[in-house]
Image (tube, rainbow, N blue to C red; front, side, top):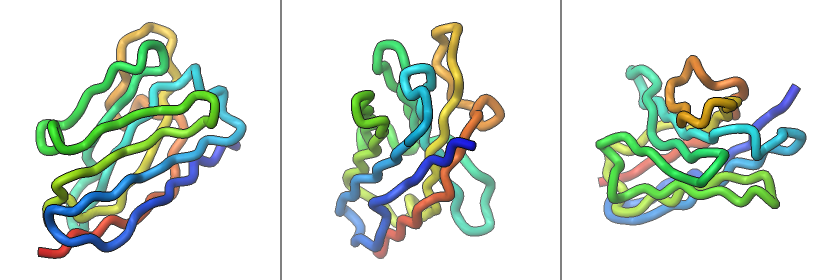
Length: 126
């Protein structure tokens, strides 16, 4: 069973930045769109960002557009989430996930994901 492993979470002040990483050892990485989701206390899990397996195109939730950037290094089987201008409302557990893709349309729904990480906590203080 493939296990994705997130890292890079922590405590940061509002306006600061963090870079999350997600390693996917054992995954045929280039066959998967890679996504980030988050879940804040008392709230449902929500989509954050997705990056295509095929051309590296990206898609973001409106709440993070212009502040967060997803990238991937296929040689390292790793996806990244650069988070800038962090806000207290970004506080959540962040999960990476992989969705197997054959059609070329970018996957960004949680039910389309095949593998998940265990999450990393991001806390933004005001």
